[in-house]
Length: 308
Image (cartoon, rainbow, N blue to C red; front, top):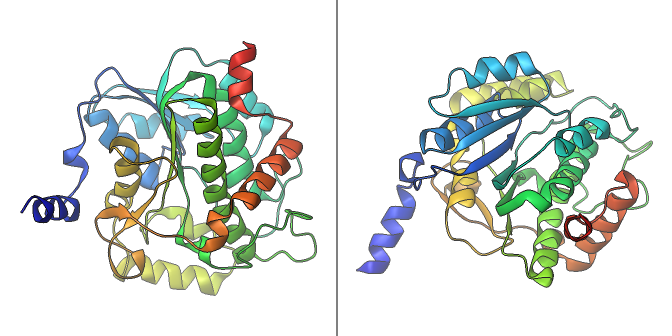
């Protein structure tokens, strides 16, 4: 009977089941809209002090003003490593939850301020740099938002040319960045475990959630289809935030991956989900970590902590 009750609880789990988070601090990138805002609102209502790490301070402040609870807004542009360094350099105090949520999706080909392909640079490298720089302050969990799109594209990181020069397509670049999120989580957890750190790294994906992320895709036909899907197939942003909240607050093993339990993992209650073999490859995860260090110039965060 206990197993049946546990299964029922999992199927009905929602943001009202969050633990008391008073005294905890959560940093959420891209918290001004979509599932980032929904997660920020839920965590603040549960008592956490939530830091909106956003590119646009005006939009961030407007979003934070809608939240019931303790909030703070700080500027962070993940497409600019100098902004990432500035954000991390100004941080003081513990971080109980670092939620790497912000992202861009299927954009026309463009570059970050540091010359990286925009989707790989923002979705992966920006969060890689931020996490390592903040890791000396993190006491609880790092949750990185990936996507079911990691199953698409080339199903491999283009290690020799992550910028996809001459081979760029919006879908290929997006899929690569989401695969990178999972490999980053895998290697981060391995390093945390090896160092004896109690911090846990997890990943989550929202399924198909109706947000403004899809409105920026490069292909107008794909954009139109996604908008139709948002209206008739998708769950709302609050439901889309549940896997992130579940990963952030439930007692799950490191390197766990959380997504919706419905058909195709598009919608439903949060549960542990699978990933493609390429996302569980420890050799690829280590190689990506080395590549990311070389590209950003930012090293493993525990070494930074020991040096401080």
